[in-house]
Length: 178
Image 1 (cartoon, rainbow, N blue to C red):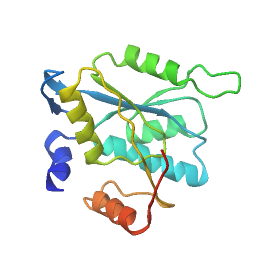
Image 2 (cartoon, helix red, strand yellow):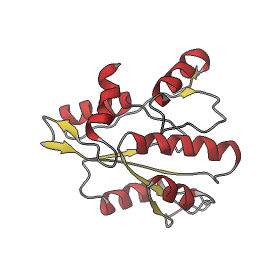
Image 3 (cartoon, helix red, strand yellow):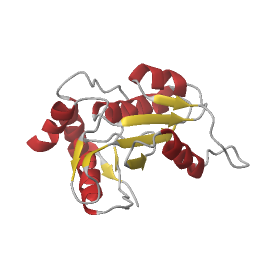
């Protein structure tokens, strides 16, 4: 879809610059945040690909937690990193604490997006979030994922990255459950 490909070129990295009418006035700023698994092996590749896509889309990105590789990945791609996050009795990071920290640390943002750390996002996702923000002051989006066995790093310096991902999804991905 040519319009979705044009979005990144028009607004550039580091600022979503999404035009917003209705609920928000002026450009909307979005923060996407997550916590990661230890960044080794296949999980490391998948998380690097996911976080790389968020950066490529021009989103502000914050990674929470102190798992191995999180700080290194954040520094590599230009994301924010916050090692301290409250956990439950089993050591699982609390989503409520991440949301609270995100709102406190990024009060200039209009939209806060939590995403699993292994989900590659495309411009279509950002367009959907912008549309929801244009039409509603408060909203919650829930999506389904396409499961794709991608065991190599995506080259986000290539203009072909999006087409390659979309082609791989059409050829071999399986729609995940809800």
